[in-house]
Length: 235
View 1 (cartoon, rainbow, N blue to C red):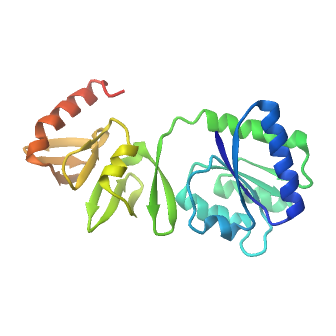
View 2 (cartoon, rainbow, N blue to C red):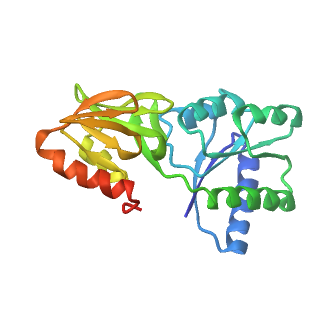
């Protein structure tokens, strides 16, 4: 299932785009789940980082597609973006938000299929795994391989990543269920990514430069998990 968002304020252009998607879906035997938005402001409000592809008009009433794309990129660096416009001079700026391509109005089905083929090839070859976390501004998609550890602090979760620290709502138990075997719960306060464990002594772990306290009762299980990880058994 490919999750697609359409962001288009013109009802006729939206209908044409949906018709192209339906035809492409039938011809390629793909399955699409399509969510519709009528403005850039609509999609960024409580953004859900669940889409594989966003098809977005540039010229819209309240928030244009380029501004919306910049906000989306703050929360979702990997979703594929395709701009749809009748003003190609604006679409060329898409490189600033790492857009895959742009389509000119009125839509040509041939051009549409060429661009969709490119997008789905990119989506299909992605090897990254993600966890979706609930932040104040909506939902953010984090690359699991970049998470060093997750900390519980004052009923909040802090995701310590290679790109910075992200604050989110949720429980450590729910978070651990979304992660893979490289993550280990070393206490009630921390889940650590074994890729980033640099040193351990007694009940202290050094993870990406930070010293974390491990529960004494978890030490043997931690050593077993770390040994299996270093030998590649978790894969």
